[in-house]
Image 1 (cartoon, rainbow, N blue to C red):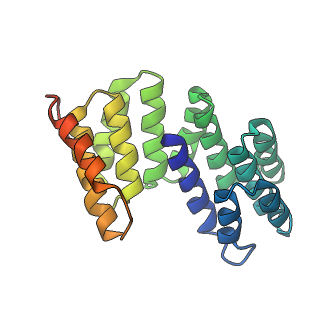
Image 2: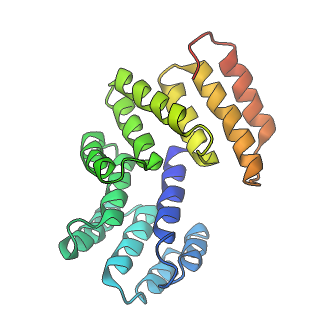
Length: 211
């Protein structure tokens, strides 16, 4: 589930700054259909090398060719060593292949540049959880929720719930899932409310601290 969330975040993040370039939506649709070769062809039409290499890195990541994906992100960084998108995408790639320390190093650097970016903070919390720095993960998640409770997106609540469950903070995970449902409704997303409520009830049955 987390891998799918990471890929969605990656596409959304890249798409927000590419309106004047190759249509990210057309590439995303091809990737969703697993038409990777066609997606690669479309991405190669992008004239801006930094955007093109980022597109290709995303596609090869989804295709499962981690080595090639990383090569394209590194190509971006050879052109622009401070390129935010390439560094963020590289961090997500490292998360995917469980190179958590390397991912955390990149994310910490990005967080200093964009201290209000909640996506980055959630990924930092996940890295700490994966590296068994549980107190750090809990501290970061609590701060995220306290400061951004009314502005978090549905997918972010879902990620927070996932991490809290891994930390055995079941009540907090249940609360995050409740926010996920309400936020998804506001965003008019189609979700399996019945299944999610079953998860919430199961989590509620375990007595641990909440948000």
